[in-house]
Amino acid sequence: MSHANAPLTVEGRRRLCLRVDAGRPRAHVAAEAGVSRQCLSKWHARWRANGEAGLADHSSRPVHSPARVPLVQGPIERLRRERKLGPARIAAELCAEDVQISASGVHRVLVRSAPAGVRRGGGATGGIEGHQVALRRRRSGAG
Image (cartoon, rainbow, N blue to C red):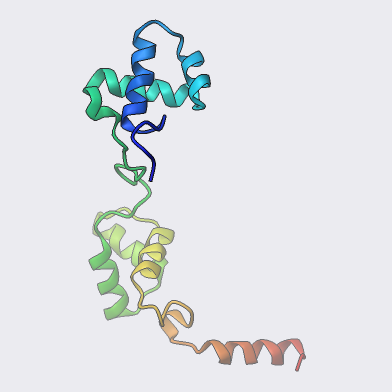
């Protein structure tokens, strides 16, 4: 935990913004404080827009995740459970219902929603990982 007069607390950021408001160049103030010019510019813009409240710590979590699959998890899991379809077939079925999602997107949903014990082996066939290792050994002639 930092102390109240540390340079990167809300109070420290306010002091840096006051220096910029007084006419000092941002690059100079940033160098003196040991932060990047871009960081100080971001703080100063927040200071001007929201006052001291804008200098509070912000979450680094994205506001939205464009790569995240939309709310089609239910239909994907239903098709997997009821018809034992793979990701490509599920994507085709959903496309017929006017839901645009790629096979890799379906796969991500299936991996994310699978119970912990199921994630490692088998997929739709329910294969056993040890059995697959034994088959590989027999085919390669080892052990």
